[in-house]
Amino acid sequence: MTPSYGGLALEIVVPVFNEESVLEKSIVKLVNYLSVEMNSTWRITIADNASTDNTPAIAARLAQQLPNVGFRRLEVKGRGHALRDAWNASTAEVLAYLDVDLSTDLAALPPLVAPLLSGHSDLSIGTRLGQSSRVSRGPKREFISRSYNFLLKRTMQVRFSDAQCGFKAIRAEAAQRLLPHVEDNGWFFDTELLIIAERCGLRIHEIPVDWVDDPDSRVDIKQTALDDIRGVLRVGTSLVKGVIPVQAIYAELGRRPIVPPGTPSFFGQVIRFGLVGAVSTVAFALLFLIFQATFDAQEANFLALLLTAIGNTAANRRFTFGISGPTRLFTQQFQGLVVFALAWTITSSSLLVLHAASPDAGPNMELLVLTAANVLATLMRFVLLRLWVFRVARRNSSPRVPTVAAAAKGAA
Image (cartoon, rainbow, N blue to C red):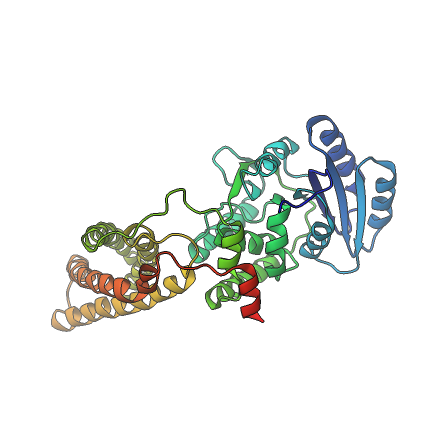
């Protein structure tokens, strides 16, 4: 059954906290832009979360004076609180939000919401890290932003490039299914929503934006970074434990491959694993040489093997064993790290044996011994990946995905 949205296509939420100096100017600018450039029906909601200055009075006045502008007041702080409250109350087909400082050029707004209004995508985000994005901000914030998104890609295996740009939109039915599983109500709200959406197979569309840093930003960068790291650990744990009903949401809203890939034959798996192993071995050797300039041999071996193990597990999951989708993704990555620990034991032992037999062995000999040990560890990895890590997924290549009702009943 198709939900009814009462004719409202787009609702833009502007969360605010003590923004009396910029609120009126920004809302007027946004109204003027939408009146000229937006062909679909739209509404702006100012979502005040516990402001203590004159922000609520200004917001209430703007709601009375300007067309299609509303105002909601919350007595608790947190951007996530404000967005959750306004989005849950909305009747629009597409829900969006912008930062009140309008750091993002509004020219990106129509392409942000167009793929959602057409049904092509489920979420749409502005990215400041695209090749064609134009960004003006200090080196400190640039470094923090890139480091945070790099951490997300490596730890959560996400594909989106910019988690916290204040320029996002989501289809209403996707928001209704995802919001109950988003726990954070602060700055991590965006990231958590995107991680869960991607794990559930929703399509995330990215728009390169022009973005100018707000010099008056009052975000506590250090505290926000700590909260974000705790959030990543919490969400990752929830996904591994199955607390979030990823499969139920995937069955309802997720976008599957047009042609589901079949499981390769045993011979095909051997060939593919060999290719992945060859690339991983070369990557390991290069990383070991790089790390050896800073760390001792054991530390360089550990770091090089850890990085290649993460990439190796992901490549073998998709390429060697033909597994796609969110099923057991984090569990399999964890099992892959267990296999990594065994492989590290083999290579570390080879170094210990080498140094015991030849205390004066140089870097070239260490690399030769480690490469041979890594080949042996690679063979062990194939056996364990095939018989343990990906065994369940291969035997159940077409699992019966639980319905939403069944998942809720099971959770109860």
